[in-house]
Length: 341
Ligand SMILES: [Zn+2]
Ligand SMILES: [Zn+2]
Image (cartoon, rainbow, N blue to C red; front, side, top):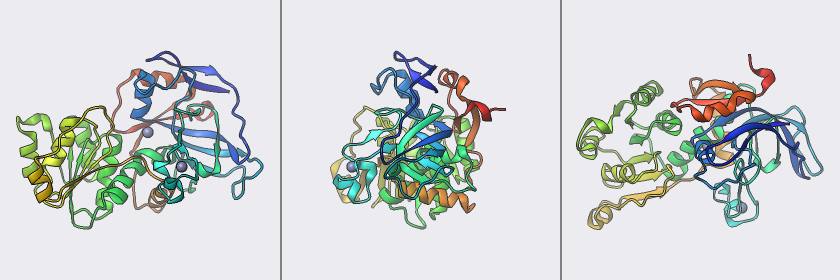
């Protein structure tokens, strides 16, 4: 079959690869859409040490083609979204419903072959039923671009009705965080991004106000004024200065949830203030299959409108070109050749 495979760092190309063979308990899936995430860009650049020959792509929607021995409840023709990891199922995280923290995960598109391909084999533990009302492209990005901020705001951030919420970084995750914060009852949502296009997208998504950190010499001070009373901040960038900005704008009792991944080491505020104001900072990683299912339910009922979230569809044969082009706040999805118009 055809797939995009990694070459040396910075290089990805279309090639013929071996047909995936599902093991017992797995299904063979025809990929209907695979989202292109910022992480894929890092993988292609060689930042994450993923070996040449790997097929990236961890945001997948597809249709089951074949089942194997041990598969129950799934049938050929079923539409599915995929959880971006194959988890062990037996570690304390998996058995307590927190499989996003599995101790022995295989990340799809990194440690095993991913979705920038015609077909993929996955175990049933990684499948989420895709409602008929949810298009393939949205089903693909829901597992990461939508469910990741949902997990961060609700399970980790424990967003309460009436809070003022600040979203730092209004890209693919942040723009959905704006929508989800509103949906979960935030009284006010402030989105922060240096990009005008991202700020505009955040306003369309329902932000009450946006802030350009490049517009002032003292961004933390000015953001603190604008977002007065904020008790929840979501950092989607992964840099020291944005993590420190997120901490510094919180009112007493505030929580900072960090989703952005990076290699820097941000500083805590002075301990007197950190302790006295009962501030907290949390890391948040991915989401669980049950959260993906919740998000898909919100989309299929019409409560969460993500119809603007997929900017374009690119057929597999031309998908390698995506990685030399700039990323916008809306997602690109890779689709099969035969569906390309
Ligand atoms: Zn992703
Ligand atoms: Zn596990």
